[in-house]
Amino acid sequence: MIFDTSYSDKKTTRKINTAVGPPFSWKDRWKMKGIGSRRMTVSKISEEYKDYMNADHYISTANIELRPKGLIIHFRVKLQAYSWIMPRDSMKIIYDGALKLEKDGRFIQFNEPGNEKFIDQMIQLYR
Image (cartoon, rainbow, N blue to C red):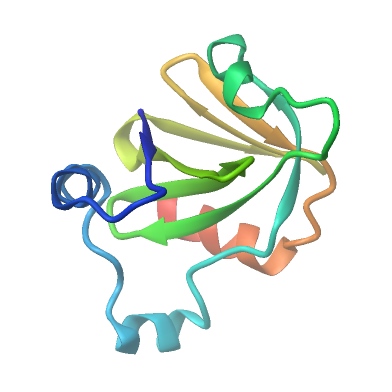
């Protein structure tokens, strides 16, 4: 499920928090040594979502935010900000040099993400 998060909207925030939980507290963020990845280059995305990321004139990037019941993939297209919500119960993480996240047959793949510590933390949290 992708939400347009360019502007703050209480209904959207409520739906996101219901699906993946509210953001971690500052204390939890400190203990976890961060809950967000650095920017990663998107190498592949499922056909249904290519319209969001298919711009030939620039490189598509995204970053991942951990939540108690799942994760959020944040990305921008031109001036619009989007958030792809992935609840833990319907998500699959595949990591073999490239990171691939799947949900209900839709996927996003990051090539050579360079966030090994973050990816290890994510795998430990959601497996």
